[in-house]
Every structure is written in C-alpha cells, then in structure tokens.
Amino acid sequence: MMFLFVSGILGDPDDQFAWTDEAVRWIQANTPHQADKYEYRSGAITRFIGQAGRVRDCQRILSKYPGKRLTLVPHSNGCAIVCEMLRKCPELRIDTLHLLGAACDHDFERNGLNEALRSGQVKRVCVYWSEMDEALAKGKRWTGWLQWTRKVHERWSWFPRLGYGWLGMTKPEHWNIDPAVERSVWAHREDYLHSQWVEVNENTGPTWRFEATMRMITKGVAL
Figure (cartoon, rainbow, N blue to C red):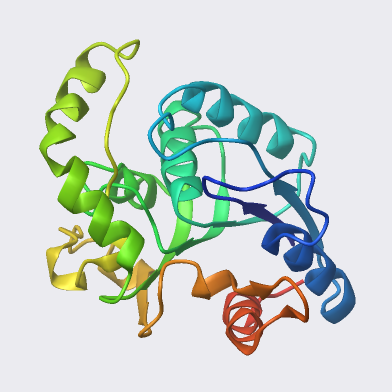
C-alpha cells in the first residue's frame, strides 16, 4: 500500500518535522507499507490562488506509483484538493480516503464523493470530524456567504471557488450520503481542535493524538 499525506494551509514545506514528514516516517518505521507527501505554501485568505495547480501536483505525485494500491490522507484544505483531483481524474483508483478535519463541502453529492464511491473510483471514505473544530467554525462564520461561488465554479471552471467547506465539523446526518454507498462511509468523532488530528509538538515531536490517528488509518490495511 502507498500512503499519500496531503497538508493543509499555513504549512511550511521547509519544516522537516511537519506532520506530513512525521507521518511518512511513522509508516516507514511501523508498517511494511510505503508513503509519500504533498506540501505547499498557502495563506488562509489566498487559498484559491494556486489551488488548481495543487490539484495537478497531487495527481502528478500519484502518477509516480503505477499499479500501487493507494490510500490518501489529506488534512483540512488538503481534503478539498483531493476531492477536486478525484473529480478531474476519474481514472484514479483509491482504496481508502481518510479525511481529517476536512475543509471541503459537507454534502457528498456536491463534493463528488457519492459519485466517486458509486463508480468504484474510491472503495472507502473515512471522515474524522469534531464539533470542536474552531478553524472550520471560523471559516464557516466568515466565509459561508461565499458558497455561491461553488455554482459559478461548476459552470465556469476558471472562476475560483472562494471560502471554505466544513465537512470536518458537520454531523454525519447532514452529509447527504447516497444510500447505495453508505456502507462504504465510516465516521469517527473526537473532541479535537482542528490540527489535533495531526498534532506534532515542536519540541517533543508527535503527540498521542497523532499516534492515535496513525493507528486508525493503518488499522486493517492489507499488504
């Protein structure tokens, strides 16, 4: 299995001890699987700038592993990148998609995950959510009115989709999962803040929350 970890905004690709780096090392040290990462620079307000390029970059990384079974583990805006990549690259085949604190649309019909599951593009989706996610709550409060840009983007892809989604803080009953694929969707709730799913202390390294997340995403993964 090949794991790809995708960071959210406000990351530093030069930081060799970011959560994505630690996740790759964890896979290598604790499993027989392989791992890679995708990191980028982005501010909160300017996220839409370069988002299309990030989607292409993520797809290019996956193209380096032909024939490999794939598990994707994005966090925050990384989830929006991956959902858009799946929409634009229907030929991709993903074993499991783990969405951590997802800053993408909470509606599975709108974010494309219903179709990805119906078509067999993705076998299983795992959503890790928390009602205590302060970053997504702030994004919803300050940018929720920008959701109209989604419809414009769907019609004219060159028009940027502004604002943030808040799947990672939304209760499962509001996800609009197609009953035909609901058995392929798994939800896990914790009382975590936004970054605690992948929490790394700058002095001591990965925390017990990081460890718990890594064990959940690798539980039951076959060779």
